[in-house]
Image (cartoon, rainbow, N blue to C red; front, side, top):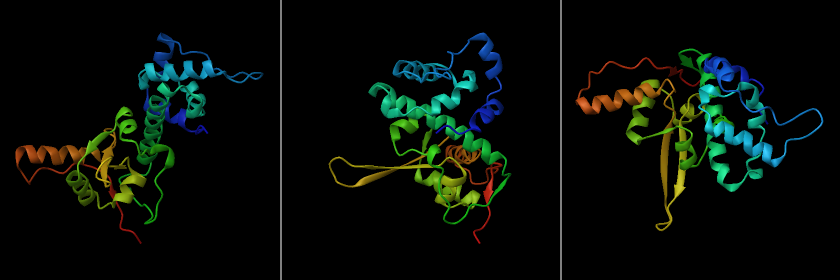
Length: 212
């Protein structure tokens, strides 16, 4: 189901939309009052979203794009579709977060937003997420006073656990979206390591209030 507020959020996040729509008209919506979109219509719409920079997408087509069932698409389009869908929902999550201000108050048992999460390393990378290390995650947790669950609920932290093919164990991957305000802390940590300094100025990032 498409989120009815996502179009409005994209209009705020992507100021170039209106201008881009005039310069490069998007395909007309596939649905009408009398007919449902065909499989070909859906493929064309997905291909438009994949070929067009996010800042130039037509917001009017976002609800229709998000309503598409990935299983109805050709196999070659399913992962790219999932990645673009994740990107759009992540932008919505970050926009919602800005409204909460600099202090977040997540519940101890908060649930990470389903639509803005993925467990596939490939899809996360395709969606624009960047992998971070355990040390970088711990640094962010220390600076924000957020638990790992808090970072998943309130920010864009993604945790993907991939089973090893031979050893029978698993590996944990951590990802953050570069536009997330707490990603500045990752940049700070990396700069500290490069300069071998400990008195680096802290990034101005949101923090989590103590759990009640």
